[in-house]
Length: 197
Image 1 (tube, rainbow, N blue to C red):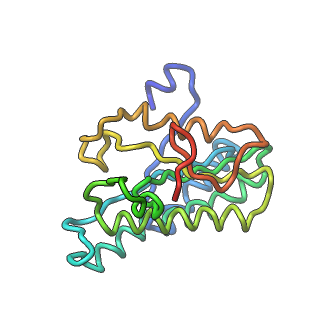
Image 2 (cartoon, rainbow, N blue to C red):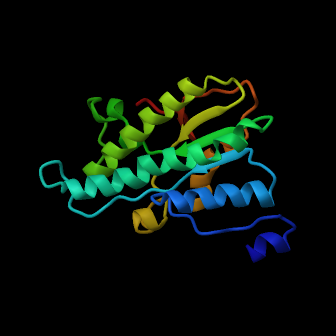
């Protein structure tokens, strides 16, 4: 935060646990108080869960933990921030997803997705479906709700082993957060365009 403020960017941070309802409400209140509103929400929290995660070895406890963060967390944070977003002139909601949640890619002959943790994969498929339902329910042409895939990025989630830098991974988030008002909603995109799912 200090570097941002030194660069003249008005920013503040606070801890947020997307699996804790009280922890989600507090940031919404702080943003309303400190910033006066919200124009863009980026839901980026995710976990892969304990390994191994092949379908036949997957522990249901792992699935519950992964869904609690990767799906329920998105729902909780979005709902907490929605009143401020509705008050914005051009609100954007961006849910960071993954192409590993694409059933179309997993079932297309010749496309190899590699070994993917089964609970994480299922949570991202669930996450994709919730995003589309949210876009349909709101039906507000001003609130654009999309999913972005950053690719395998060197972050804590990947054990810092991805081929893409955080800056490269953030490019899709920036693109979707700054869409014009007539931009798409309910879509799934990466740097190359639309992701089939």
